Image (cartoon, rainbow, N blue to C red):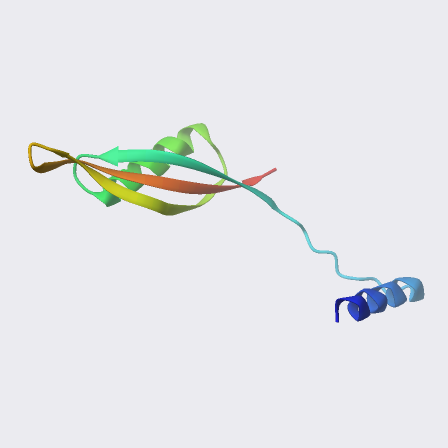
Length: 89
């Protein structure tokens, strides 16, 4: 199927048919860790906000892991590991 599609594209090219050109974007993914004393949502919000001050073009965030720090039998910190996607210029 791919070969026949490529042949059709080549045929159109030879016949002078203008093909639609698509813009190609390149993205990078970085990992960060963030924490909050109140909840996971706070850790996510603070992590994205701080990263946005240093890195421009963040398009999405994905929570890779979440865990808590326990001190004296109580949750002391909520931590998240985030993957941030940014589009490169």
